[in-house]
Every structure is written in structure tokens, then in C-alpha cells.
Image (tube, rainbow, N blue to C red; front, side):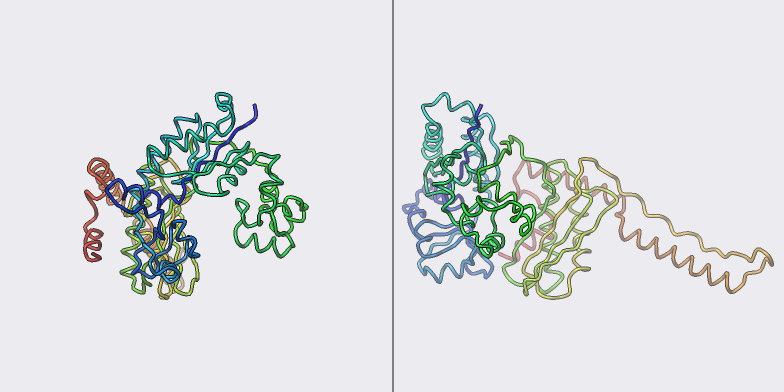
Length: 442
């Protein structure tokens, strides 16, 4: 049976969801019809454009650029701060509708998903009928629009959904590749970043068609394994399945670009605590433990560095992540003002490996000369060295290993807080230090 794959993508998701919510609460203006963006606080230097309306796009406003730059291009631009709780609500409703039409739905981000419609299209006159039903139900029920790409594989369905927007349905089957996809600039091919596109351009490869007709060995010599992947995509070759469950994450992390440069350790520690809290809660929610903790920084000179620690136990407690990330940060940071901070956990396991107790310091002792029974200076010196080395090792062990009793208490505290949040809401409880920080920021 030939495969039939849909790729469904919400049009300007964050802005569409904000517009829909505003209209439901009586707003007179649909911000999708005026120059508008979703971005950070316009008063904060590091806010960036997360989504834009079509009228805003006409001013040359791009996703990812600073909000301050967008305002220069369009002084009358309306800017709204992101509301991720709202986005999560709309995303969940979006996926629920998709699951009514397809037995296998793979959500790949908050606003897009693949549907395996293989065999189901026999219930409709053509491949696009079910797509129209999906579009209509989402529009009428939820109030926003989607683009749907249709093909026999995921990469072509994804490419098709990126064609003309909004509220469109496009097909891109193998016999349509040469006409619809090959004339496009190579940068528009899925999985082709700016660096790869620049490299291909320097090799004389300007369009996706040029790439499709290139020699695979030649591409691999310049782009390694990515060269072969891009060649396959350019030729519409992709046999990856639509998966109902996303593959287990290889890592859990969170990072933040700061609204102002941070030059004090105390300020950085507050941010590390918030990041550690978020990452640890995600680990606990999924029943996962981590054995490697990594801290990443980007300073005001845009230098990016990271430092990690591998544990001999596994953890998902907020306290562990925070204490270790602070330690890593101190070892990594040279005092240059920071623009970005991140905490990431890898080496994941479902097994809880208990921390070992640090060894006790050995009782001081001296060794006698076996021949004379007297303590010589050589032996005394040797034993001083031996004792100091033992003490150093014990001191190091105590620094690296958490106190087992404290570790258990922190696990119980996290479990209790998670339970309260689950029942009464995210902001029902929090660590006093973090709540005071939020109060001071208001």
C-alpha cells in the first residue's frame, strides 16, 4: 500500500493563538490583520520576534530579529509578550482534532504534526478531501488556520506545507518534485541551514534541483554525512515512519537569553536556580534520572562555552542540579558579562542510582622502620605525604558526593511540591528565594 502523509502546520502559531484568545474576550481588532508580533518586552534589549503577522512581514520584519529592530522598521507595530500556558492549551486542542482523522499522529513541535493517512484516503474522493475537513474543523472550532502538505513521505509533506500561506493545502508527490521543488533556492530545502547553504552556493549549487543532480560522493567530501542526507531529500527520498510516540529525549535542558548582561555571580545563581527547577521537574515528570549535568554560557562577546560533570549516581532533584550547575558555572566563568545561561542533563536512565557515602578520613598513623624499630625522617616524611593525600581525597569526595540524608529530604520535598502544583496549579507553591526574586522584579 502506498503511503500517504500529511504535514499540518499552524499559521504563525503564537500570533494566531494570541489573536484568537483576544477575539474570544471581546477584542475589536484581529491582530493577524495589522502589523503585529509576538516578542519579548519591547523595553528589554534581548527580546526577539517569535511570530509575526502577514502585514508585519511586508515591512521586512523577520522571525528571530530583535524587537527593537522590528520597531524601527514599523513604528506603529503592535507587540505582545508570549504566553506559553495559552499556547500549550491551543496546541493540545489542535492535536486532539488531528487524532480524530488519523490513527497515527506524530507531534514534532507545539504547532506542527505528521499524520499517517495511508489507506484512509480510499474513504475520500481524492487526497485533499480529508485535509479540507481538518482545516475546516480547526478553523471553525478553534479559530485559527493551518497549512497542510500532502505527499508519500515526511520530507516532501513538510516541504509542501511551507508553500504559499496561510490556510492552504499543497501536494508534492514524486512526479511533482521537478516542477514544484527543484526551482527553489537550496536554502529552502528542509534540514539545510545557512552554513550548509552557503557552502553549497560556493560549490555552484544554487537550487534544490542543482543539489538533486549532484554527485553524492562529491557532496559527502564537502559536507560529510549531511551531504548525502540533503541529496536524498532533494530527490524526495525519505522512508522515515510517522511515530505515534516521540523517541525518548537524549537530553533535558533549558536556557535563557538574558534581558541585560549579568556580571555578578549572585544574579547568575538566581537564574541557574530557575533553570534547574524547570529541567528537574521535566525529568521527574517523565520518571527519568540523569548522570551528566552541563552548564552553557554565552558572554557579551558572543563566545559560547560549556562545562559538564559526570556523576557516579543518578538524580532528578532540583537541589542537585542547582548545586552542581553553580559549581560548574564557577569553574567555567571568567567574569565576562553573560548574555545566555543554560542547564542541560544527559546520560539519562530510568534507574535510580543512589549516591555513595563519602569515605571517612583515616586515623593518622606513623610507620616504624622494620629493621630498627625506630621512626626515621624518611618514613615520617612519606607518611605525612600519605596522610595529606588521604585527607585531600576525602575532602574532594565530600565536595563531590551529596549528603545521603539531605539527598533523600530533597527528593521528598520535590515530590511534595510536584504534587501540590499538579493539584492546585503551577504558581501554588515555590521556593521562597525564587518567589522573592519574582516579587522584586515586579
